[in-house]
Amino acid sequence: MIKPPSLIHEFSLVYSEDPALDLPSDPAERERALKVARETGKWPIREGQQPTMFHFRDLTREEIGWWRGECGHSTALGRPLSDVEFNDLLVRIALRGIDNFGSLKVERKQVSKGIHLVNRDVIEAIYEAAPRALGEFFDVIFVRMGERLRPLS
Amino acid sequence: MKATNSTQRQTMVCPYEAPPSDALRAFGVKAPAPPGYTGPDLTVCPGYTTSLPETIEVARAWGWAERGDLRAYCEPNDAVIDGVDIFAAAVAELQDFKCPTCTQERK
Image (cartoon, rainbow over all chains, first blue to last red; front, side, top):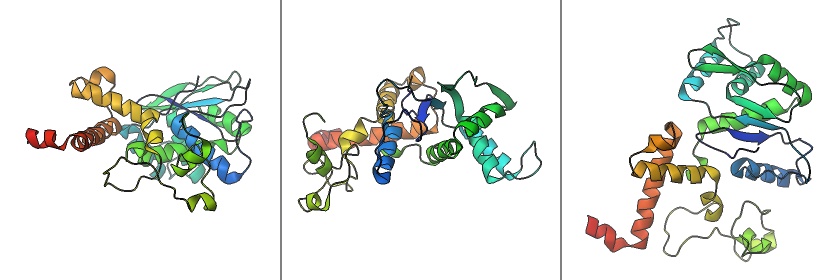
């Protein structure tokens, strides 16, 4: 089920290269259609097809603080995170579930007080299936983190 | 939206439509605003913005906040509280626009 954009609840994203999406071929038109889909939650899906839906939730203030701290000095690695690592970490905090993605189960484990992360193998599986999807999701989550009230501002 | 065709929606800066051609722009392209509106230029049709799920969510949150029971609707985060503040200001502005004398009487 597609969950519409929300400030409170989970919302769904579909990867732009998902074959179930019916998007214009012109790059500018394609970007416009994707922007509208992300804002409205009305994804242009080909008839009879089922996209893979990734469900996210906006980060809490506590999660943003923890993520920024980890970027500067990772508790596990004892050094600052690289670009790829902090991208993945943000997706691991925000991701809540996936529909239509094989038998992979999304589980979240607590790593710190108030902080839960999706299993690392989920991120690896997304990367295997669609290497650019993680970067795309990161961009959306990151923008929402900074501009949560776009529709009203 | 069903009452307008694609070209009409393009002239109203509808995000669902492709940007208008230069020829169409020559006839004037502007997001519709009510008569007497003096605020900043609208960047998209307000019909689009006001029907976005997050706008509707904030409108509902405002309704609960007005009744003093926002927590019955959601666990309010910073974004919801900011949204309710912005929405409340917009409602007051609209009330003033619809009935300026009512606002003066209240003062």
